[in-house]
Length: 142
Image (cartoon, rainbow, N blue to C red; front, side, top):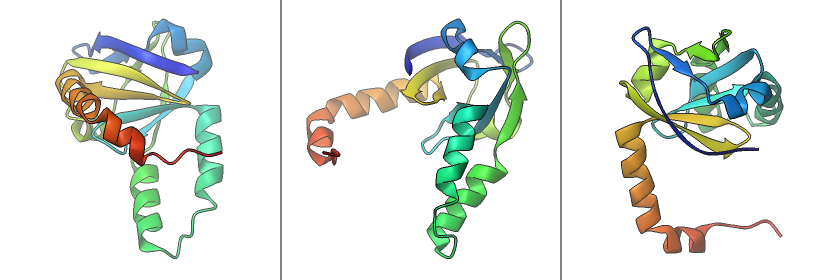
C-alpha cells in the first residue's frame, strides 16, 4: 500500500526521484496521467491495467464518461524509471499540476500523486479544516 507524504525536488531537467520505498512496487515502467485535482497520478503498470478494466465498464454513451476517459487516457504517458529511480515528467502533466521545483509525493493507496508543494499544503490545510463535515458526507460501504 502506498501511503505517506514525501517532499522532493524536480531537477533541472524536470526529473523526479521516486521515493525508494515505492520503487519495487512501481516497477521499471510506470503510467502517469492527470490527477482529478491539480496533481499528477502515478500508477504501476499492473494498477493501471486494473484501472483500465474498470474504465471499460463505464457507459461511453454518457458525455461525462467520454470526457473523463478522453482526458485521462490522452494525457497518460508510460514513463521508464532510470537506474537512479528517476522519471522524466512530461510538460503537459507538469503544467496541469503547476509543478515548479518543490513537490510533494503522496501515497493514496493504489497509486501516488505528485503535487506542487505550496498547492498541496493549501489543499491539505483546507481539507483538515473541514474534516469533520467531510467525514459526515463520506459514504462507507458496509
